[in-house]
Length: 180
Image 1 (cartoon, rainbow, N blue to C red):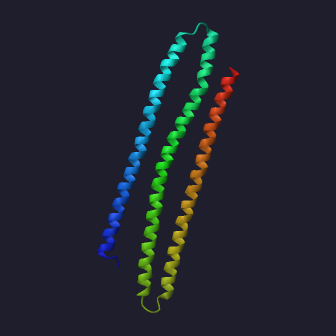
Image 2: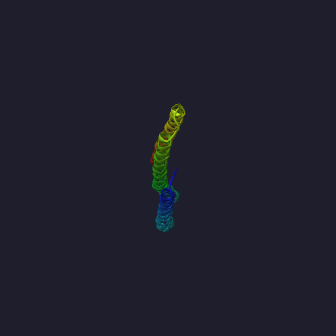
Image 3: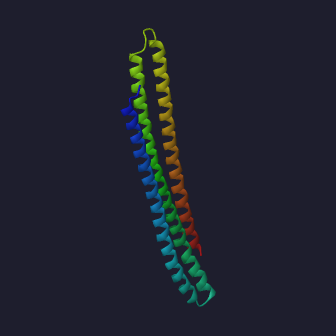
């Protein structure tokens, strides 16, 4: 059985984890706001420069050349913004994942401790039932670890795909800009 002190300690740890995760969530939001403010300032400054450049164009050929020169940097900046946004989101998600894994591991250890204590005090002849129960717990833990590994692999694949798509978009923009 769990003692009152163990229950209080578990509640305290859960509250600390909750506040820690809330802090991480706010850090992620702050980073996104900062990224958006920086991007907005840069876009405003670039819009002013572009407007000045368009107003100084003398003919259609020069206008086409100006458009072509603006397309590639825009694609690169969009890809960079997307990468920053993805990095912020994945970093915040990773913090939540680490906290979940730590909590799950801690809960598993405490549960196994309770099971071990209960098995020591089990009546004679119940060894088989205790062994089956422990085996079921071990199988559940193995299944949870497998799911965690699969999620990690899926995240890695998604990140690789995101980077490949971003790089392809930038390369396509460069190719299009060169053809003009």
